[in-house]
Length: 505
Ligand SMILES: [Zn+2]
Image 1: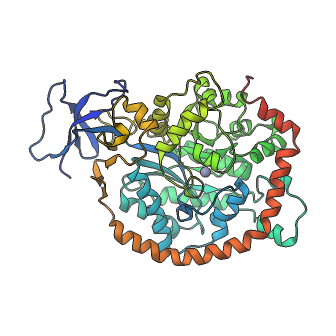
Image 2 (image 1 turned 120 degrees about the vertical axis):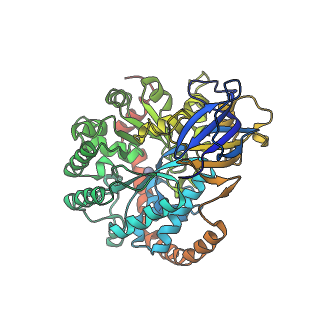
Image 3 (image 1 turned 180 degrees about the horizontal axis):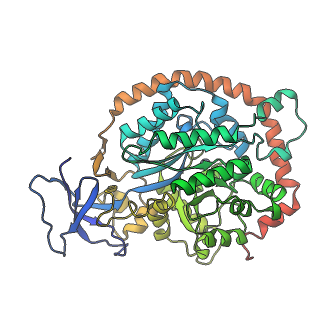
């Protein structure tokens, strides 16, 4: 058992407390939990003689942030793309196009995204990962890297068995060469479900800080058999479900064409996947009626403003989510379409985008963004009783922020400056499960210089394969851009749906 840790004299953001000027407190950690909170204007704590003291003077202590939507497979593609619509980006970033990768690369890419997350105060990530190949070795390398680093991870294996691109109905006539690039092979729902069920059994319980979830990639990419199978596994094991829903206009158009009543949400309810355990990633093109249905079902949404904008998908109706009482989480999504794992950027965008088009107050406040990045994320992950708040008995997942940093000068509001001023630069120390994984700006579980050398080696192969991939996929780009133009231009019903989105029933 590690020594108790005492964080002494920090401003501590407590549930139900002053969100602007949080009180000074001492927080005692024992093992992986918060054992006592006192000091300041409260009675002093009884501190064990062997406790390690962390000076919290001039620091703000906040709950570790939760990134509820992320994929670790393309962290090495950070900084590669811009001005690309969703389908063109996917052509370069999806793991199926890359095929099997070396173990060292799997490890490096997993560590890289998670290291950046920790440095930015993210203590828990939901990694919705496509395993290529879908085998135990690939899974074990990834989970092993997470265990080594010490971040908390809710891991799901993304499944799909229908090969069509979401935008397929809008594709123009294609050459055989292009058709071979954009077409896929159908999957095997029974085999996929058996693989996931076998892993749930083999890796049970998971090591500390690792948790399971389930992920159909998107309802329209999965057969009813696959969706119902995942719903059954979720029910049997009480596991959260994360899936992409209405991320793009193509997904909206597809839903309108293939589902009774045109509703992807209705279809999810039908296959048993619209439950309090379900969280929908994106929800950019969800209708007001569907938002109300999500709220009634107790399902939630994880908002990904960085990726939504970078891939030209638009702005999710966050003010309406809030008005309808939909529980909200926040994510940073892929590193190849957000280029960072930084929830400070996501929190700020959440507030700014909700208010950007309306001269009247939108009612989406810094406190809402911070809640989405903490308690909202924790609930989405099924860990609402464990993480997301600084309270007795909760897991000790904590972040110390430097209030001497210029982002905090002068100090006016902990919550507003976290959302609007902090960039991640002020994150000094991070604790996950009671263990200091970032101490005074240094990661403790990984040698960063050695890691950079390891990464440089891995990147030699990545650079070669990337160059080949770019030239291999290039012939399909004009076809996808044409499909994108058709999608934007030729569906008046779809446009009508979009325009009525913000305006009531
Ligand atoms: Zn995603």
